Length: 270
Picture 1 (cartoon, one colour):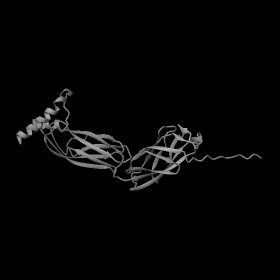
Picture 2 (tube, one colour; picture 1 turned 120 degrees about the horizontal axis):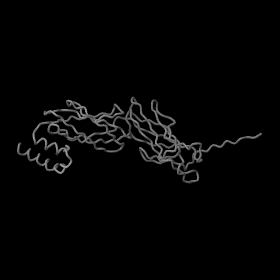
Picture 3 (cartoon, one colour; picture 1 turned 30 degrees about the horizontal axis):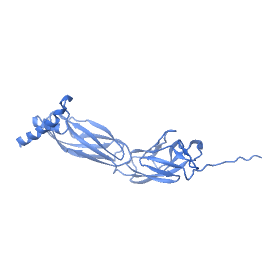
Picture 4 (cartoon, helix red, strand yellow; picture 1 turned 180 degrees about the horizontal axis):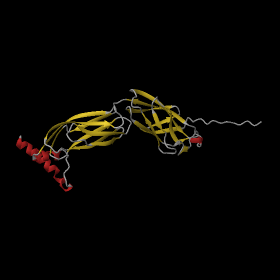
């Protein structure tokens, strides 16, 4: 009678996985990694290289073929990385009703059909769910402009989370103004954006400059801004000093001069 021999290849102690995003860390089987902060409703990616070594230390360029989740917190979802992608990129989505706190998930680097004889490597990924994942700075909070002349707000978003989140910048409270701008704030980066505002009627206006996540209702910040619009030459020049765009472009060298004239005008009329 013939007895078949079943061999099981276990992952070697030498075999590793190089995680390259959202943090960089070398992991071995049953290791763990803290990825960072994410807000309820956001998605993030775990990236890892496909290269590794086998039990003898031999380098294998494409050892891992896929990155997949084998265990997730209740209500969470994921998308495995495409087969043979390098670096492997697995998507994880946090439910919008997730409570604050630390969560763990089991993730596996797979060698399909154990072709390279390295087995599969499993690790624990830890994330902190919290709405405290971004800060915003808005400047200036008091603007002057002429009729129909844009005044530009500088919006700086410091994304301290692990999601490359789309944000919507908009002005709430201005008459006949409903222009919004969608921007991408990369994780662990400080990004600066320009948001122009202009009106066709003179007056003193108050509005809120809002920055909202397009994926998470937990992420929203608002800043009160005062906007003075009139027909005076001094205010037209002042708006240029605040970053308003002249047209045509050949007038760009006049920016500094017109800003200086605004200052002189203010001194004379004060």
